[in-house]
Length: 139
Image 1 (spheres, helix red, strand yellow):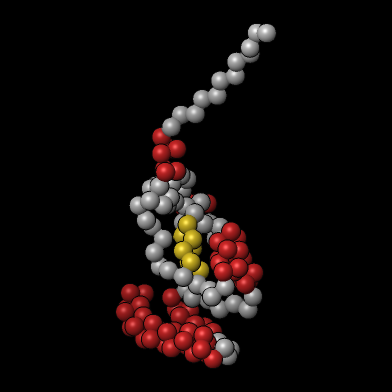
Image 2: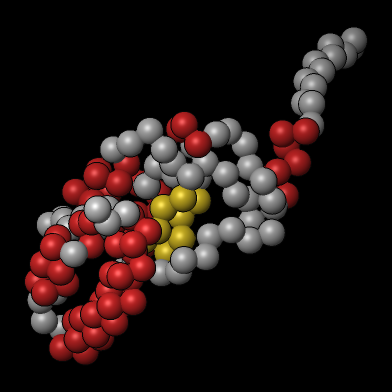
């Protein structure tokens, strides 16, 4: 029986080659990406990849779980990048890159992936005690 690691080791190099060719084809020709969708449904579904028909559908499917550490979004549209980043229920969103954790950026999740942030100036807030003092002034 094939383990997930074996599947990844076998599928990943070929997957990168095929996806790269299909994405170049889509970008240059402007034609449909049905081949990419079919490939994802047949081969990449073993690794958890999914196809979708609308942008709202993929956002809904991505948010339909108890976890929210990082999300990855690949698009040619800055509008979809901004909207997707806002709608994705996760602590970090990487757009068109696999890199999401940087020392100067806050890193952390929501939902069942924790509370608070590491890194960035916001990380210190978990270690501070906020005090509010209200003073009446005699006049």
